[in-house]
Length: 448
Image 1 (cartoon, rainbow, N blue to C red):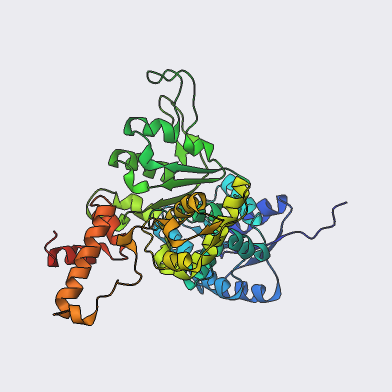
Image 2 (image 1 turned 135 degrees about the vertical axis):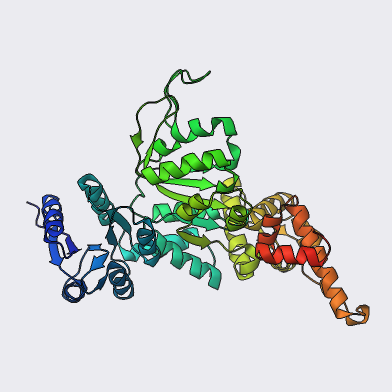
């Protein structure tokens, strides 16, 4: 006989019919329900009871569901809250997700969707194991990394779409995987896709699948990426590379939560959480009319920025030690050690390729070094990206400070442009500049 206590759900709605519908449905799921008619009653119940989930209407007689979300975020941030909004109130739902809501439902409430949401929320990991698991995978004790771990912890407990921004090689896919693995969809598929690697003529088939005979070469039915990620997470890497025609179809699939395969007649309902990433400035891409604004707003409900390695130089030693341990394990050789001068050289390097470049540098040095000691020369770092001795000129060499600073600025901007094949958006991100600031500097220096 199962004697474990039933999980408790708080229902907050001033309409008796809605409360009764939710109470009956959740009761059949063997859940214990408590109901409140307004914000005041809900806050009083939250003081007396511990709940596993809160379902709240947006409009309450003495306040809003948004106020309740904020109240819970302050008192018990690990309690998931789902917002019930009027049909078509997408902006309200997005505001709730930004405030910390787990997910949202629209009226009239569809019972299968309600049961699915409740089950998903109750699968959330307990608060204790989240940060520890993230720390094991995301190395570094610098303030930027501590902040990133805190944000991942919070976003893992939400169903909000997340736009992960950051330079190439900074670890955006790892961040996406951690958000997935620490959330309620962890047991379901995580499907990553590089949007820039799919030929444009195959995109619709890749994303939505196709039916046998729908085009030349379609010799059998094939499910798409959305179907493969059903119940889990679809990670759209380099989403800015999608052509405009595909952006329209992607937007519809996200809005309708359904896809139609190429050559198919019926739509298939899909339940996926969308995470996306790009090294480009999506806002600048929207301004340049290369990315749809409506899709941008659907994907960028919450932005999570992954810091570059330059912004967390204090983590380089820990990352290097981790990489060398892994290399020793993979090769079956004794672990190599970094000579102090080699470590100093790494700390003074700009790492335009970020963590991925650090791994490649150490893998090469691990192979080349003598006596299991990596010397500075084994690293073979590009001199143009070093900021060690000689980066600042001697005062006797400077006739005019403004001219000198301008020449340094010109050199760094040109270097960033060359490294990114003159992609101005990517170069601006590499220099931690806004696109507008980059444009101003290019004009000032005559590089426009």
